Image 1 (cartoon, rainbow, N blue to C red):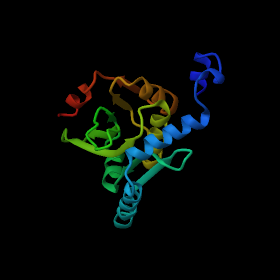
Image 2 (cartoon, rainbow, N blue to C red):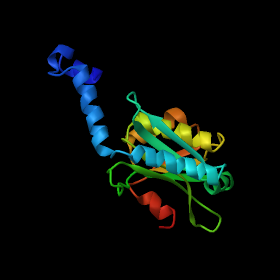
Image 3 (cartoon, rainbow, N blue to C red):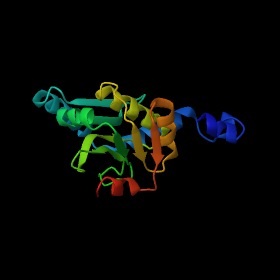
Image 4 (spheres, rainbow, N blue to C red):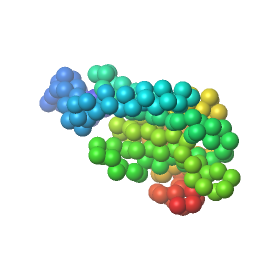
Length: 185
């Protein structure tokens, strides 16, 4: 909102009010998630934790208490990460879900050169704020253990979040989907 105001020489030149902007964003998010979807997601995560008390999930809400981002990992993923933490791959080019939102699997490779899943996230948007939340949440799930190398697509927002949030040895901004080739796909 501030950026738009500066671009047009002040809020009075925008042609809409802060409230109009918030209502637009609220409506857009509301239409993207059908009634009952949020409850179903939370119920699924709750059941996952009842079955597997070592599993982890986190949901980020926006200022209107609507789901913005979510991350989850089961206990097998957390154990595998502890064993194969050397290289992880973040790729948000998948948009096969019905909401058209970025799906972010967090992948690695085991000692048999097989792709393994360390966790997954659904993001509302590909912003530095969303990626920062995701990386903080991922590290929380993994007991703060940082990867040595992170392979990503060419997302500037992701690179910014990694440089601000994750202290690591190496980060590679790969060509889009080339990380998948390195994971044996």
